[in-house]
Each structure stands twice: as structure tokens, then as C-alpha cells.
Length: 506
Image 1 (cartoon, rainbow, N blue to C red):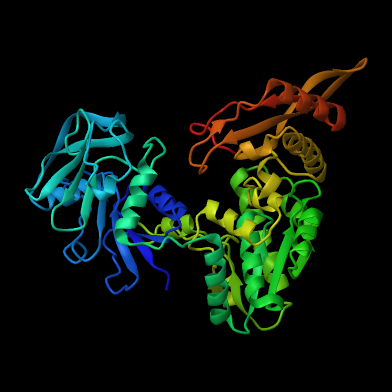
Image 2 (image 1 turned 135 degrees about the vertical axis):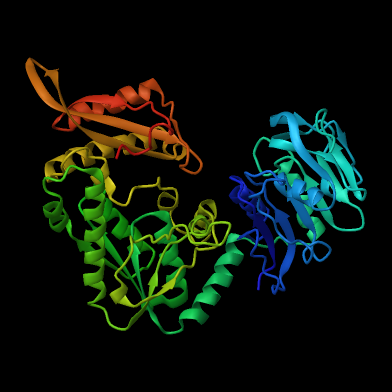
């Protein structure tokens, strides 16, 4: 087993970010509900206690018994975690006179403390709490302060336990990663969790898990399912069969291009042209959620039909990633929602699940893909909705509307790559609006379609800003689309951020 760090989740919005920072330091970690510590584990090197939306003295606050953790493992409490350690050890935590939020600087640092090694006075940190520690227990010693917060960081004498009332995991804490690295060194971590080590260990585990069994996997063309396929292929080769369904709502030539990419990777892929089936089912449907359901059910039906043509399939491969796993459990350990990348397959298939990426964050998936020699354009693809262009055509869907949108989108994406903008954007696409407007082409009056360009920057899609693309680029895109895409005479640019808007229009 690989050595690991445990992050006990008390409900903070930044808990996943702590995990990502630790992983970036080449240390494997797991995020676990605050009350689910694996006391039988033999490979745990240390424990981090996360922040929380609660105050430690709230009746409903999440409380954990740390008696079997403190003294046995090095412990670092972050924000609520630090306050919880102090509060449950006899200290006082009270509402701050004013909410301590935003940038601050460390005015005092004990440079002899191993947690703060290499961090200098004046280092910027990020505060985000409404409470503060007003009295520390006797054996809790201050090791860092700001002008307003005396106990910005402390060390418990006689044990390897520390607390910080700021967030080292966020970007604005300039030496935050250094502090986390110092903690890993205190824990004696080897820090050998790399894409190469993940591939080696995962392939070995898959071989043992699957043996000579056969696996079926639904491909979307996206990074998660593609990396899943390559990993499984490394482990079981010809015993993996992939199915890639063309529902007629992919980008221009995407089905053909992706099939070539998969051939290049040596994958056994069955490509299914199901355009007509989907167009027929979607005819006349305008309501967005209904369109999604029709496309989802259609995909499942086609996948199921193809799967039944194969013999002796025992496993279903899925591209589930770590955020999906974390989101599937509340911090009380109850299931909130399930994640199935293929939309929920029929129970009648009676297949066991294999999810080789379930330990990885999105950025780690990309690094693993690059390590395995996958082509950058496959790895760096923008997120693309499962229903495809079906939710970028407002109103009913027809083959002609799909043609218009594919052509316009192809121009937009091609020019974005040509101008070196593609990799700077989280997600981009064209929306076909149910609006005709008057235009003039030559001496003729036209009455044709309007398309909207969308481009956003983001890190996790939870929030997103509209991308401030150069005017010259937008002018070029508009001119190319209007001149080359029959049926379009007007192009607009969406400058809405999320929230209040969404990234997609439907």
C-alpha cells in the first residue's frame, strides 16, 4: 500500500484544495468525513483537520474524537481544525470583534519551529473566519502572529500537533505550499506519488482485479473516459471493448477525428452512428430538460444494444474521478448523489464497476494522460456537455440547425487555436439562438440566424468569468462565420459571468 495523508473534512469549501496542494507535493492523500477516520490503517503518515462553515461552540458543529489520533500521528489543524483543537483542549474560541477575512501578513514568526521553516516575517496569508482563539491552553505555544491575531499559528508542546488560523491551501497565502511541505517533512513522507508511480501501481492493481475478465467502456471523447481507456488497455489489452456513440450532436468531424485518435492509441473501439435515431426522437422537442432526458436515454439504449452483442462481459469501466467520489458522500457519511458518467445504465446489465481514476483530481488525470504518451489535444480538450450541441441549439433540433452550429463552432475553435487562445480558456462554444434578424449581403436583404459566442475562464466550473478575448479576434470570428456559414447573418458575444448566468445556455 502507498503511504498516505488523511484529511478529515469538517465541511470547508476549500477541503478539496488542501487535497490538491498535498498531491502537487507528490504525496498521496485521502479526504474522509470527519467522523470516519480509518483507525485500522497501517500506512497513514499524518492528519490534517479542515476548516468548517460552523463555529466550534455551535450546537450543530461537527465534532470528532481525536484521542486516538493526537500523539499517534502528526496533526495539522487548519482554521476550524485549529480552533477545534484549542477549544477541546481547554482554550477559548470566541466571535472576533470584526470578521477576519482576506489578506494579512505574519508580523511574528518562530523560525525555530519546523512547520515554519523557510518562511519569513511579513509573509502574506489568507484569513477567512468569524471566530478567533482568545485563550490558548497552557501547553499550546504561539509560533506566528499577525497584527490582529496573536495565535495565527501554534504548536502543542510535547506532541507533533500544530494549528494555523489561516488557509495555507489558497493561492493568496504566498508561503502556504511551503508550510504544507514542511508538515509533510515532519510526517516523514517520502513524497513519491507521481503520475508514473500511479500508472505503475494502478496497472498492477487492475491486472490483479480483472484477471482475464472482459470490460466494456463508454467513450465520450473527453479526457476522463479517454485516460480510463488507455489505463485499462495497458492492463488488459484486447479484453477491453470501448463503445463511442455518435448521437449527431458532436462537433464538426469530431466522431471521425476521435476515432482516429483512439486507433492511434491502440484501443479496440466500436463506433456507432446513431444520428438518425436521436434526430427522430428529438424532433419538435424544445424544452431543455426534456432534450437532455431524450439524449441520455438514447445513449443508454444504444450502449445497451451494443453491449448485448458482446459475450462474457463482466465489468463496466467508468471515468469517475476523485471529486465525484467526494461529492457522493456528505461529511456525515450519507450518500448525497451518485455519479455515473454514462448516465445510469440498466440494472439488467449486471456488471461490476471498475473505476481506475477514482483517486485522481482533474489536473492529475491530465498529467497521467501526458505521462502515458497521449496526444496533447486529447488531454487539453475543453469540457464538452454530454448532450453535446443539443443544449447549444435553443429550441427544436434539426439536422440543418446542427449543420449551421457545427460550421460556426468549427470556425470559432479553429481560430481560437490559431490565435493561441484555446489553452487559456476553460470552456468555449457557439450557441444557436432561436432568433432571426435582418441583414444585408450585397444588394440583398437577408433574414437569417443569430449565433452567440461563449468563452469563460474558470478553475472548477463552479464559478466562471467571461473571457476578455481581443476585439480583433472577435471581429475575425464574426466575419468568418457570417461569410462562410450559410444561414447566419449576425454574431454576438456573451459577456455574462457565472453566477448569475450559467456557462451553457440550457
